[in-house]
Length: 167
Image (cartoon, rainbow, N blue to C red; front, side, top):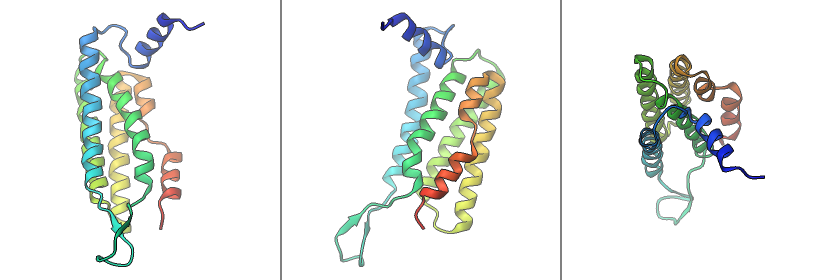
């Protein structure tokens, strides 16, 4: 049977909100989601449609790439992790972790907006994004091990990105 109390307990456990008041949780949810959605939107707005056959031809396709497929999952996992950190007790580690998360979101948005075409810039984008994600995961783990695990970059995600990206 569906038990609303069980759903509430699981949700508060998921976002680490057991000892937090509703206003704090809602503020954190608004800030983390707002930040992630803003970064994703700004990056999406920078994508320019392409024309096949030259400038005078009609627009026939939007640019594709692995980031468009992976971005929602990446933002949702790190946003959930950041919300868990937000709900952790206030400490300097929490401030550092949230600062790293915000910086990682900005960096990812910048790289998506720039859409680096050269192999060197693509490597730089991947390495800097993975480095920021790892730094955030490291600081998040100090506050909450589950938040750190959610945010940890994994090799299978990078492997998937490399397979999906068209050459």
